[in-house]
Length: 544
Ligand SMILES: *[C@@H]1O[C@H](CO)[C@@H](O)[C@H](O)[C@H]1NC(C)=O
Ligand SMILES: *[C@@H]1O[C@H](CO)[C@@H](O)[C@H](O)[C@H]1NC(C)=O
Ligand SMILES: *[C@@H]1O[C@H](CO)[C@@H](O)[C@H](O)[C@H]1NC(C)=O
Ligand SMILES: *[C@@H]1O[C@H](CO)[C@@H](O)[C@H](O)[C@H]1NC(C)=O
Ligand SMILES: *[C@@H]1O[C@H](CO)[C@@H](O)[C@H](O)[C@H]1NC(C)=O
Ligand SMILES: *[C@@H]1O[C@H](CO)[C@@H](O)[C@H](O)[C@H]1NC(C)=O
Ligand SMILES: *[C@@H]1O[C@H](CO)[C@@H](O)[C@H](O)[C@H]1NC(C)=O
Ligand SMILES: *[C@@H]1O[C@H](CO)[C@@H](O)[C@H](O)[C@H]1NC(C)=O
Ligand SMILES: *[C@@H]1O[C@H](CO)[C@@H](O)[C@H](O)[C@H]1NC(C)=O
Image 1 (cartoon, rainbow, N blue to C red):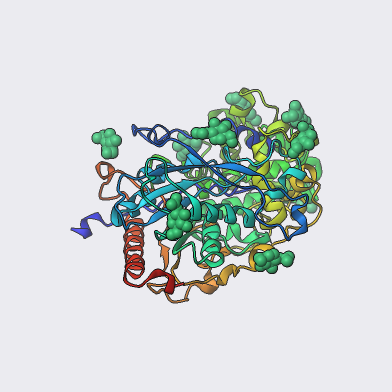
Image 2 (image 1 turned 90 degrees about the vertical axis):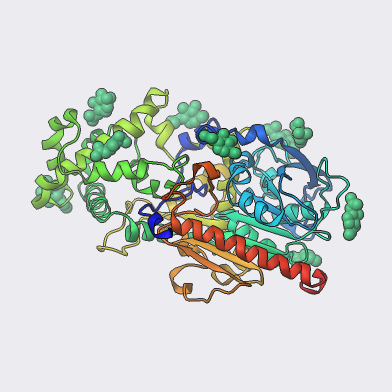
């Protein structure tokens, strides 16, 4: 039976940790976009009302960086589903991380939290992170008001929630952490976050599942591109490397050709070469947004690669640019391959123009308004609606992860341009927050980094995830044994926290979910059930 369902499909989960330096237009438009619910499902926003829970603004009174301190409280948002709850069951908290909490509701409706709740008589919760969605402790996002945005303060919120919550309608039950086992789940930033929860607050958090948990903070994250180079379709990878190298050669050694190059991509309005090359890295960076769930899968990576790899000019309008493309390739030092490479460059340019640039221009942006990382006027905006400020503030101060064009894992060439430097990637840090030095990653890495470990802390990862090099499942640590107490699961072919998504039973097929994802989820259910048995068997206070 199982053989029949052997899957060909290997696919992903949407990552919210930015795949590249986000230009301003994208920071802005993120505020307007609300993700549509998948298929014809009942929107989970309608299914689960949002509730408020009041927590202290400032949990940490002995550190000067939080001065002036605050004794006030503010509301964080949460949602819950008690459909499967039975007395004795766990509380399963999905930590929202660096995104509005309502984007995480599908995981309560049919993703990993739903699956765990069904299997354990659990109560599922989605909890929003401070400074995201609607959970703001301050009236505006001035640099001073961002001082309470640290991972430590948020971990304390989440723990305070677990120790004090009374769920509306369930007032007759005491479901605080001293009365029920609490299990935390998170993906990406939130994956690292739940690992820290378990380690820092073991009396509150009985267990944690860290999926694609980026627990090793790094200012320079050039390795982001390595899994893409390794697992991406090779013709597309090699063409991206070669043509990027040619364009870098023009920028660094033959600058008089730059205007013509920008014009070919319809980005002649972009003044800065690094902004231009950042826009060109869009295609390859969409790798992270692939997902096995067709409802949320992003096809851009696939489309970019099939266009780039095609050796005939796919777009009639671009045939007239053939000589220009050949000249540019020659100017970039690949003269002997100019004829064979030209169609690939033209398909890249056309794909960019039609799918990434033209729609932005039609929406009323100029090239620089949308694609530039520089705009002091924009970065000065700090009213409460400028919620784009939160994650950059976190990565500028503590986490880093700047994606630099430098690694040469394959073919001796980087996959994105060498113009993508630390200096460039940290533009927002200087202009929006006045931060001139690298993030203080030691504030994060003191919790264990790659080697974070704790009983009942699971690590789940995607083999082809661009974030895997900063997780405990990075190549040098891959041989660490997996145990029931500290499970480690690498999902073959997967990208970013692919175990988080799920389907309704009436949506599953032989191919979906793909077997490696299905198996990982089954294992997660298994080890959580085993952990809960420990909780039931022994007076749990003795276990910590
Ligand atoms: C939650 O609190 C915020 C203010 O912090 C308020 O605007 C909102 O209406 C409250 N929502 C609910 C559901 O009570
Ligand atoms: C602040 O207090 C906490 C808890 O008592 C302690 O672990 C930490 O080391 C203190 N930090 C400083 C900077 O004194
Ligand atoms: C931002 O909020 C603070 C209070 O937290 C206030 O003092 C300040 O005036 C506000 N800034 C602006 C520009 O309104
Ligand atoms: C729940 O139980 C804990 C201790 O077991 C107690 O401290 C707390 O007050 C109780 N909460 C409610 C709402 O009864
Ligand atoms: C980009 O697309 C627009 C709209 O189709 C077209 O007018 C323009 O000529 C294209 N740019 C290039 C360089 O071909
Ligand atoms: C090229 O890109 C377009 C737009 O993203 C897409 O519709 C098409 O399928 C891609 N592939 C090829 C081979 O043209
Ligand atoms: C600059 O472009 C010209 C024209 O294609 C070429 O002959 C020359 O070798 C290029 N210079 C460098 C440094 O690549
Ligand atoms: C800079 O940002 C402001 C505010 O969003 C915008 O009005 C302006 O057009 C931008 N300028 C450039 C050059 O992009
Ligand atoms: C599939 O199941 C879900 C959840 O039970 C339900 O909301 C949805 O309408 C079903 N879809 C179809 C096509 O029957």
